[in-house]
Image (cartoon, rainbow, N blue to C red; front, side, top):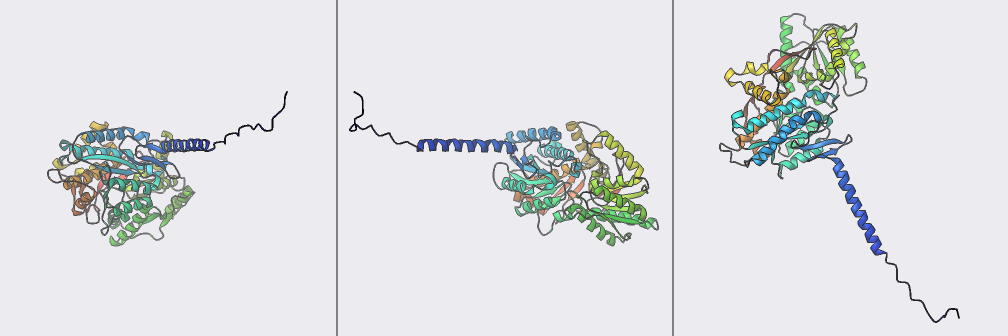
Length: 502
């Protein structure tokens, strides 16, 4: 018989257990999030100590040489890495110096013309000389570990970089005691200098020349390069001499109105002051342009027209070398080929294209420059002929530097040193090294940190630089450091004309 018994009850279904499933799902989510963070961190990390930062995802940070930033820098960065590892394994006391540059700059931008490769070569050779007394003769304790840091295109990533450098100087295993380099005089450079100065991390500029970076009231920034005020004074004195020698010698000023660029703004102001001091008569109606905006080629076309209309004998160009190139090209057009001599500051090296530019472009530019009838002179911070005129032969440091340069990087002669970038990079690290060795005492046993290095620099450091003797003033600038008047040619030659004094 079939049927159901209402008195017989089925056992109740056990309650559904939700929490183990929820917990399991949470574990999966957490694991997924951690894996995602690990993957994205690895994607953001360019190398040890270097992270992708900012709107352009630049690799910003500090490398011991194991990350090269650019393929073209790999050979010199490999040498820096190997020397750093030797220092770390030596068992001797060591400290670190960071060399800061805008390493991720667009190769087509004017910052590429600062010959960063040559600066790092010079910095590396200074490291070698400071670590081997037979090469340098100024002691070898503490040993120097050279780090290379990227401040980003146009120095815009100064904040994350300076935060990292300050942390390295005030704790941790890196023993950072000073910073060198800085490359370009821009607003970001000034902010970086101010931040490091406030943290009492001493700095030594190599090619930066804007006056606003140094201060007698707020110590911390020093440099081996003549500042804009010295360059402008030397330029005004040279032009005043020409004006005195030739009646009716007319001088016109062309200036860049881009106020964000502290190099050209200070160069203009310094020159105008120096012109008054040297009693240099200037033509009325200076010619202006504004860099960093579209239509700059059109602007230089107008500038060239005004120059040929005004017919000056000489021009003081208060602007960057890349913009000077635009002016030269504008002057090559038919109807504007009026002869004129241009005198400008140290950034004139940017008038040349870099090595990545095609041969056809360079050849066309050489033809344009020749057709323009523009002669370019500039106040050079370094040139191989300069130390030959400033030192007695037995005391000339260029001899040893050239020998070490060729043994390390090959080549012959001094062609690669013509623009002064390698020797300025060397002198910045070399001068810091002299201060560091002094802080360590005669036997090298004293502890050295950022503040003791700063104290030595404030007290006074003298160094026999390859670009000339370096004697630091109270404001951090080299005292009355001579410069070279150099003529640039369309073929890329740097012809020494004479020694200039501030």
